[in-house]
Image (cartoon, rainbow, N blue to C red; front, side, top):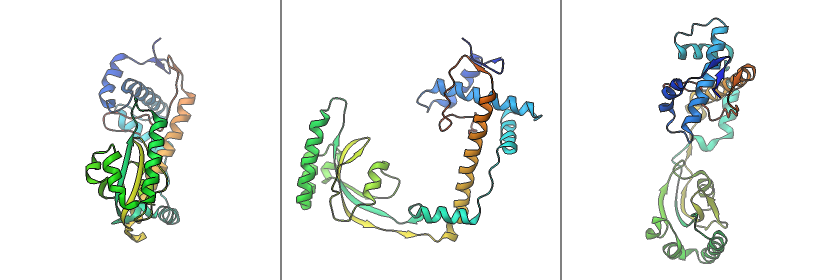
Length: 255
């Protein structure tokens, strides 16, 4: 069954033109189809309210600016964000650390791997000075050749689940629990930590305002689009729109 939006059929040619912009998506075809659906709903609404739709991107932008505006955040909101997220505004923060990786692969016996990792963790906790030897023997990471050393690491360079522990761990100690990441199970030891320096609010106030403005705008746009979708006649597809993932505009412009 063909897909139609408000009585107009979505053509294969439209989807094919859209498809190249979605090659980084896990499901390029689905993403391209959803973009065309969302965009058509927006353009239909732009036409209904009297906007010129000869330039589609300008029409969509004008519609969103008119019907889904986002207020500029005030100083109080910016200060609350600054106080709640000091790590975002700290410069010079870094850690030096070692780790032992027990890699999880499709063939691995996970219960046996966990038992091994827990046993090695006990050894590392009992004798932290032997951490390098344990890393050379057990780690599945190339850093095993360097006694598990990852060198000096700054925020944003590690997978989040690893980084949360690494930057909260006590310097010189082995973290007392296994750390789970997309790569497997880790034993972590921070050998040195530099706390960094918190930038003054005045130096980052405009950056915070820009971030909050963008966040508010994104939320307003998505809520407005959901309302339009609820009132549109869309046939030929089970519409399961995840607004945190779908692109609304095309050819370089996205919501």
